[in-house]
Length: 225
Ligand SMILES: Cc1cc2nc3c(=O)[nH]c(=O)nc-3n(C[C@H](O)[C@H](O)[C@H](O)COP(=O)(O)OP(=O)(O)OC[C@H]3O[C@@H](n4cnc5c(N)ncnc54)[C@H](O)[C@@H]3O)c2cc1C
Image: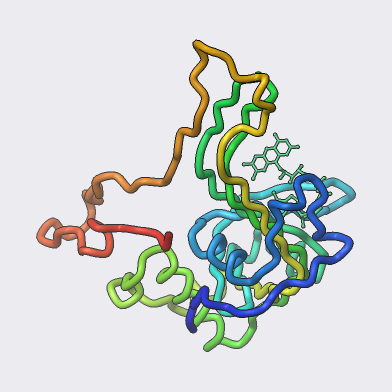
């Protein structure tokens, strides 16, 4: 499985994925959508069960034009999605805080993606292992060969769902405040405070092998930029 973000083509904006507010910030090209998906870690899945909408954060990995979700076979979210129910999910990268001259002009710089769709359970054992490998490699490249592969019990307890990426949108805000020039005045700092996810120092698990130091892919951890 490859996770190459260099994907040509566009998502066709639909009635449901057309960005209305600030449409100039909308992006529908697969390259932008995939770059955001490949950099982020967490998506929030929205689904309706018993007439009540729920939003649940979870992990995902993109492989080609498919997004994979995994979770316990007992998870309400997984069971609802496995039933074929429509759902949406979003992913957000927070790039900065925008300090404006007015109270209401304050904003955030971000890159976000919304995906609408339906999932299918991955039953094929080889495809399921491939997806599990993609999850581990997505968290840290080169990790899969260092750990025990899923056994029968892991496989039985874990559900993998495939979401074809067919209806999606991205929205990207960059730059400074958009207040009118007349709002700028002396004595008030305005600008952008960039934010990014930065790894800290690795912390050894006391039950792990003390003789092994953290490998390079952890000591020099980075996400695709
Ligand atoms: C970190 C962050 C902070 C934000 N803060 C605010 C805020 O304080 N107030 C506010 O009103 N808005 C905020 N937004 C923008 C918000 O996500 C919506 O874009 C906004 O509410 C306008 O929605 P709409 O009515 O145009 O579209 P809707 O009718 O709500 O959405 C229509 C379709 O447009 C697409 N879409 C809408 N928003 C996004 C998005 N962000 N990313 C990708 N696709 C999208 C989806 O496909 C969606 O189904 C924020 C976004 C982010 C990422």
